[in-house]
Image 1 (cartoon, rainbow, N blue to C red):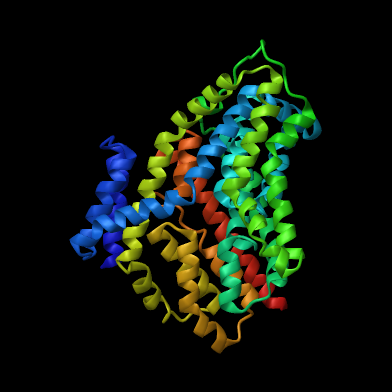
Image 2: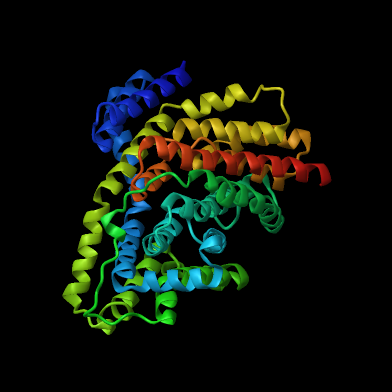
Length: 437
């Protein structure tokens, strides 16, 4: 019955947004309350679930999204994005620019959280789109597929690291096997699948519109690349320091503080204020005006992401994920497939890949141990399953929809299917590895 209620609530959400033309945040709020009541949550606990859902979702994303939007706006306004785009296209040509962006997304995605990588790389996608008049979804999806795979499969991302710990797997082997599985998944879900999406139109957001700024100096190539990619360099540096140095260095409070993604973004924005702002002739007020416009542009995106967090929290607090997991544990299928299936169904219900993976891990762990399944492969099976069925209760779905300014239909046929391909190809890769290990 719980699954039926969830499905009906998801249908209601889609109808409110598409047919009823209700504001997306309000639709999320209404449907979340309806879902909580229908699932039997005590009424007095619903307000707390709403607050927790908003807080947990925006608490880790707000600073990063806001600072990332400010950086992205400055990168676009200063001409740095156009400069990077021209260098990439000159190196790879417009014919192979997808592959260049895919490789960039994969490299950047290994040390970065998905949300951070998305916010950093979307301006680069649109700079190429605007300059060379290419379809945004066709160009951008390969890069985002690479980000998604690294988020679900590979340490040091939080979910894979937690799975490695729970399954008592080997971090190094999991990373090696994950890279083997990740490459075909990214290629098939990225450049190969994107060839079917050339006809999707993506009206430009004002946030990434490029304007002629003849009265200001243009940044050089080195300045453009170094400033734009500074957070990537810093996060990679801090990750290396934390994983390759002694325990006393890795746990140093100063290193822990400055390696936090929000602090890295703040450091980057301070540097960019000078390298792409005042040094190119802009006054401090002009730079701050750019930052203010960037915040206005993403206000509704933040609310929509908050709305998806409310629905996710209601699903979690109602106990739906645990109930579904218990029922699936009795299915007569291979443990690797079962782990993938449990994570996939929980992901469809609660929206969070991390919640899906960690919930599935607790259910599948006894079966994995009794069947002597390779724990490194189980990490990848559950991780790939947690990427399946991304739809209206997933904040990543709404990030993609709103930043690319797409209809619900086009978001489903691009983003959601890309995530399904990543998940299914990941499972196939795990099963093939299992034949040889």
